[in-house]
Amino acid sequence: MRRPALFLPRLRDRLAPRMAPPLAALLLLFSVAGCLSTNVNVRSDGTADGAGVLVRVYKDADAVQAQHAEASGSLVELFSVDRRGAETFVHRSLAGEWGVSQLPPGKYRLRVVAVLDEGGHIRETRSGDRETDFTLKDGQTAEVKIVLKKTPTGLIVVAAVTVVILVVALAILGAKSDIKPPPPPIGLLSHLPPPPPINHVVVASELWVGPATDPARREPSSPPRVTSVFPEPASVDVARRVMPTLTLSQPLDEAKIRPDTILMLGSKSGMVAGATNVHLGLLRFVPSRELLPGETATVTVRASGVVNPDGRRLESDFSWSFQVAQ
Image 1 (tube, rainbow, N blue to C red):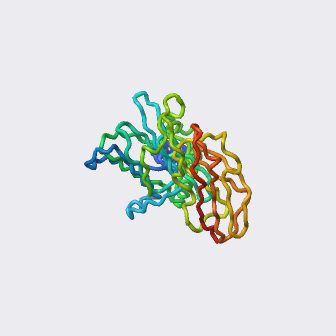
Image 2 (cartoon, one colour):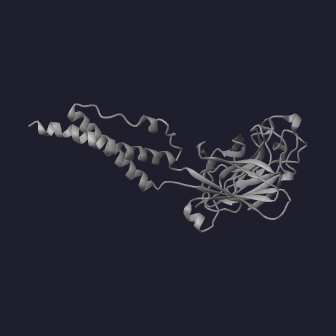
Image 3 (cartoon, one colour):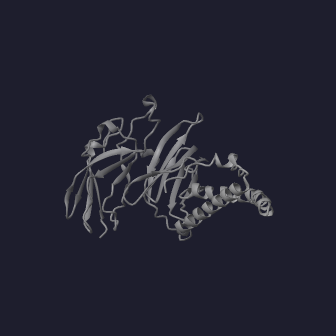
């Protein structure tokens, strides 16, 4: 009668070490769900007219194979980095494909800050995945490929069920044998990061020059320009409750932004009440209600409310339109 009692702890002791690695691997799977990868290829183009950066953002591996860079709504920022490690803002964009030319040689840092969902809600990326550094010489171009990854929902469900089964099995074996189950591999699990929430070219001479934190080192800037928008112009099937979002060529004086800096007009519903705000350097309009099915929405940015720290404003109002889903 005691053989089963002796058999259970032996079985448990054999299973526990074998079950811990897959359990850790499955937990790691959860932690990387929704992560991204960045690849930089620096090449020489035979010219000496400064350096350049070309960025393409892909939704997944299939989009890479199809060479279809259409992952608009991904906030990517480019900085130059000096010898002390200080960053100087160069450019930011929500476009799926963009580039900067005539950059001075040196070290640069590309950071994928966030991804916008269909409603324009910002989902910040995990710090360990989101940035990469590279160095450019005169006549070199950095081709950056960013692939947004997402673990299939079915795989996550299967993994979750498997984890539950493994944990329950260990608990039952430990309870029946009156021996405490072995602790998890603390060295690995304790360092796992928390799971994350599930075509244009710009000339560098037009961009902001000098660190925004040191006005004495800034050169006079040109007026800010709109560099990308979300949803993209003329896009269709946009969410009915969407937050139109813009990136600018320079940092803004947030104190000059008024609630009515951005206006939204629906072809069926008329003016849409809401307010303008800034988050993560993004200028966006937060509507107070949904748009009507199938209507065309036109967003207008008032130049008077978009001002950089030097007091330079947009040269003119900026507008674009998109169509709401039925």
